Amino acid sequence: MNFTHIEEYFLNKLPKAYREFMLEVGGGHFGDVFLYGVEDLIERNECYETKEYAPGWIAIGDDGGGRAIIISFSDDDPQVFIVDHGVMEPDEAEQVFDCFTSWKASYFSL
Image 1 (cartoon, one colour):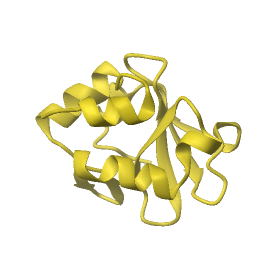
Image 2: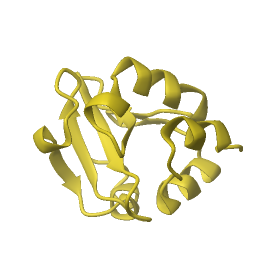
Image 3: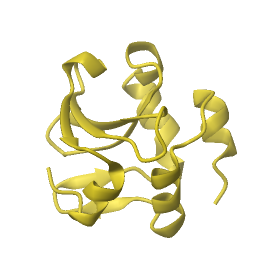
Image 4: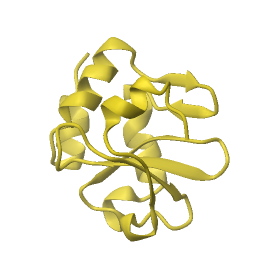
């Protein structure tokens, strides 16, 4: 799986824990959570204007109820947050898990 176009678009490397998950699974539905596949990441983040309203962050999925799941590029195993699609500002986000690895182990519970 090639992440080059995604990392070039965001001007950041994907966090290690998230990258490993994408290599293993590549996205999909996990209960109420939908994690975007590689082919959807740029399109969804363009739609939500993530680069403009949450620079340094990436929307990796949603809850099917109008909220985006976002992580920061600044950590190899980033904290997981949820934020309303209409806001898309990290200051308005609610922390879901301390790290992506723990969130994955919980089967992506919210």
